[in-house]
Length: 130
Image (cartoon, rainbow, N blue to C red; front, side, top):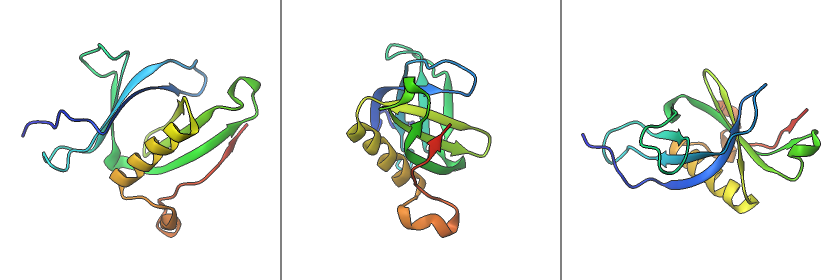
């Protein structure tokens, strides 16, 4: 089957991995429900890149945390959220709170998460990172 070329979102947001620096990346959220492909979040070096650096299969997403706060000064007043998968946690920063909420809602909708899913282990919440 052919992959749906209409992504849910296309936007530059910044991921960070622990012990690494922040790097600006181009993200595309794709819902594969119409095509039979998996739901994925792809990220690229920039908006002109043809091949993604990584494809995050959202089937393995366990949790999404919104509105994370950091004690480090450089991360204060940032709109940080994370995506926790079985293998890894991805930290991302949006340019505005509205944009962060839009990404979180869209990812949670694709994953079938909502705020009342805490009992099932799938939850959205605020966390402070040290």
